[in-house]
Length: 190
Image 1 (cartoon, one colour):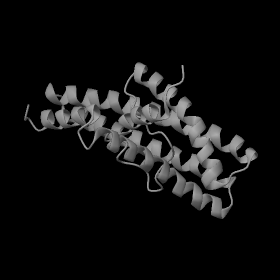
Image 2: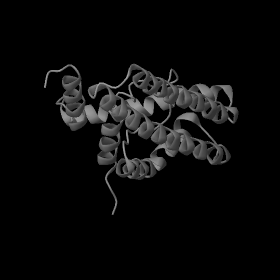
Image 3: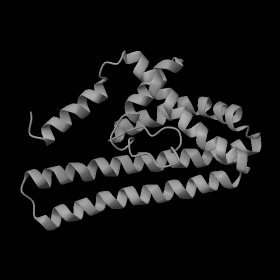
Image 4: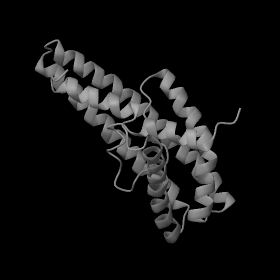
């Protein structure tokens, strides 16, 4: 069964609309910062990325003007990056849950500090890996292609977000509702 591209983009963007996605790297990151939180969501992430892979690859060819050889080098690196991001999201979600439970149960300051430090480590490790992979991708590109690649990475996400916003008619999406509810709970408002 073929899933329409618009539906895939909406689903993928709904997953992108998490707090972690809003902390994108300075270069705009790469495609697919979907927000899987557990095993089932990781499967969805993988399926969505698989469905969007062709679209991303076509965009690389069109906007970055990469050769077949470059695509063969770049796409495994992009897929590695997506796998690292999914893993970091799962670790971040698990650590955040632990932090919330420890905090609400009156955990010791040392335990809370340890969990906060782990959250920081997860982010630092991910950013370091993102930088390493971006450098590996860009090593195979000319200077002009590197510029186009960074622009394309941002453009890819921006277009997906616009489609999501347009399809929702400006109304809150389910992920936005969940985020709003979580903020209210944290602030003690419900």
